[in-house]
Length: 406
Ligand SMILES: *Cc1c(COP(=O)(O)O)cnc(C)c1O
Image 1 (cartoon, rainbow, N blue to C red):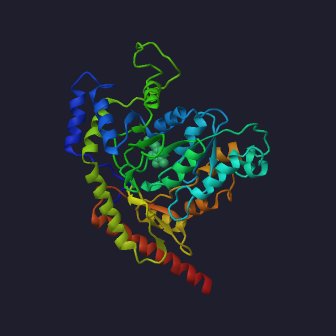
Image 2 (cartoon, protein in one colour):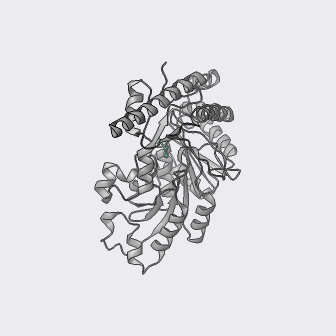
Image 3 (cartoon, helix red, strand yellow):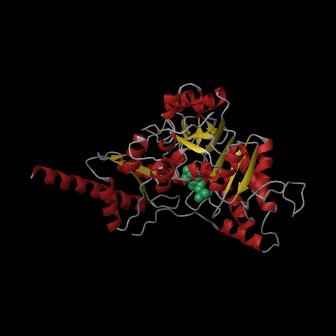
């Protein structure tokens, strides 16, 4: 049985919508874009939405919207896909990594609160240094400007937004939600994306909704939305001519084929999410009583989980690396989500990070294993993956036990 890591879920109505665009002369900046943006804002319950060509571009523009610039500090998580921190480097800002909650893998808001306190009190030099990247601890940074908090709703589970909204509000920090993995997720019965100044969603083929490549920014600030529309379109203003560029911008536009696909996918998003949830339930049923496999933990505030991936933890003495290798030999793909960002080669080189800096993120990175997952996965495929996974885990423990007793 062949089981892919992920698969898009595209139907005839979606294929037709893309084909109809191709029969018109408007392949960019047309009616599909506007309709997708409006429908998306309505779905999330946000005042405005701006489509872009990737989640990463959306994060970059949001960071610009918050006025984050060279040398500014932004608190974020090391346990994420690299894009959530890279967007800060694009503006030469400094990511201040704060470790995560061991149960959910989302930012530990007690630590965030401590970090904000230490970084905003001007005389607490030693306390401040603790949060800075190792390579900057000795540097005279002058006035440290903590500008924003950038939480990630990791694997489709909302971060602790009550605390983050309070901390950001009390300290006049911008709050940017990386909701790229969490379209459809509710925190305390409210859709993610409504807590921050801006939030970003992504539509890569493995996400809950896909446009091929694509992303969407939602924001409560009319001025930010206007800025995003200019920045994504080479710095043109709404009123300016095609060859008039008011500011340094980018080509971050979403094309009409992608917008058409997204617009129709959005109409059945709840169906897509329900299908994903059913697959997650099949996994949970089959893996529930397996001693060395830990299932995803949902916080009480997660009133709707949006299943982006299905990530289990391989508990010792079973070894995640061995389990991955054995699964690969059986031609079942798995992924070690996430190797923490601070240990990526260029973060180590630039900021001096090393193993031990964020122990919880590193531990999660060592034991987490994403299993094949999509809305089109069949119960037989889930059964097949689980049967193999249980065998592989149990045989790896049996082998270790016999090795240590002989
Ligand atoms: C998918 C994802 C993004 C954006 O990815 P793109 O490929 O640029 O669309 C950003 N952050 C996180 C956490 C993601 O999972």
